[in-house]
Each structure stands twice: as structure tokens, then as C-alpha cells.
Image 1 (cartoon, one colour):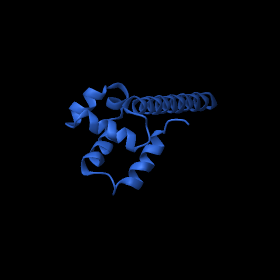
Image 2 (cartoon, rainbow, N blue to C red):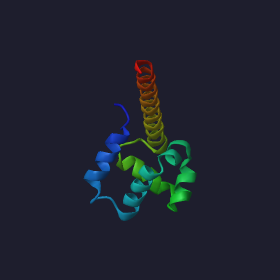
Image 3 (cartoon, rainbow, N blue to C red):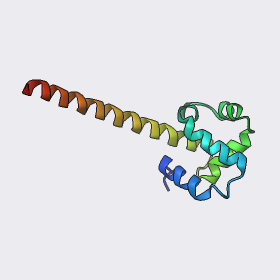
Image 4 (cartoon, rainbow, N blue to C red):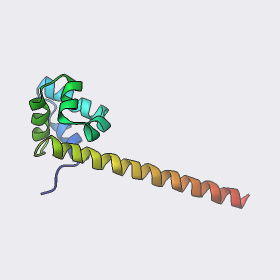
Length: 105
């Protein structure tokens, strides 16, 4: 079975919002606001930044369907890489459109 995606995480948080403890809900929200810190940080740095024990970060990852923080971190890395690729593709297309418009004039 493939690890969950960021879209899966978002759906899980929305559907589980009422069942998450306040600490887990705050941590889940923080992960979306600080995706790069999750993707490129460590379990220690994330727990320190959020002022929660490492076990709370691990518990959130498990609650969201990951085997642990490392798998959740990998999902954020994939998500950020895909977002960067989409932005690059969009930028390239805009340059092509601009170039075409310049040639038409």
C-alpha cells in the first residue's frame, strides 16, 4: 500500500478535526502552514518548533495513516517537489505565450 498523500492528509484532518485532541489539531494545522519545515526538518526540530514531545509528532503521523514521521516527511517532500514542478511548468508556459505574443505583433 502506498503512503498517504498530502491531499489524503488534508481530508483526514478535515474529517477527524473533531476527534483530534487540541494538541494534535494544532500540530496538524502547523504542518500545513510550515510544509518545508516538515519536509526538510527532523522529528526533533519539528517537535521543538511546535513545543510538543516527539511522541506527539509521531502520534499525528500514525493518526494520519503514516508508519511514522519519516514517511510523513517524505509525503511533504513529494508534495513540495510536485508544487515546484507545477510552478515551473506554468512559468515556462507563460514565457512561451509572451514570446508568441511578441512574435505576432
